[in-house]
Image 1 (tube, rainbow, N blue to C red):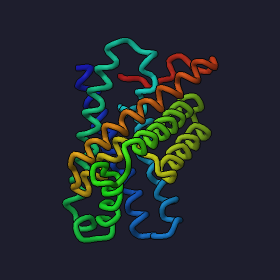
Image 2: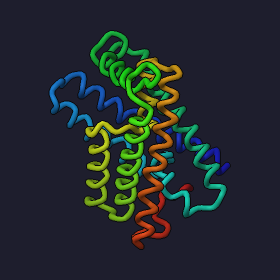
Image 3: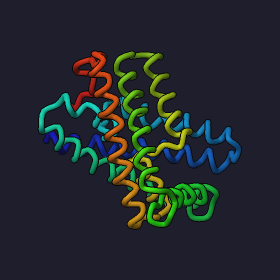
Length: 228
């Protein structure tokens, strides 16, 4: 029952991240100036804010705390990752079946995003995906950790700005990429490689930042979101 619950919470987390990605795509489609990208990056934060507020299970929000946990936490992370895939890809294909994506500007935007991240097609290099994943992992960890450390307005703003920074900065989030690839129906070897590299980067970024906090004596025990 424990892992079934994790799987359910992870599906919901994937859904929320995908909905954040949907808001970003819409803003970029209908406001083509840089303002649209900025607004979209802020609205994207709705997804992670909901994840933290509801206590959902998002792989990228929890991997950074792995060294604090027992061995069975690794299984929870794997189950959670699979649930995130179901949620994000499910919403992506829901969107792919709708008019704004099949014949509208939103479809053009998400196709551009997907093409730019198709490694084997020359969209980007493998090390670019990895490094952008690392930077995103750091920012996700910072946002989630500050949300827990500073309940209220400060923590909420910290989370929103951390997410907005990783989105507008062009870094890559593995679960968000799953939504983009699904909404564009653009799955192939290159996009799968991208997901694997970005997942590794997100993990290294989160774990590395946690390690530096630990080294500096700034880790607060029990700060990781509870897995109920």
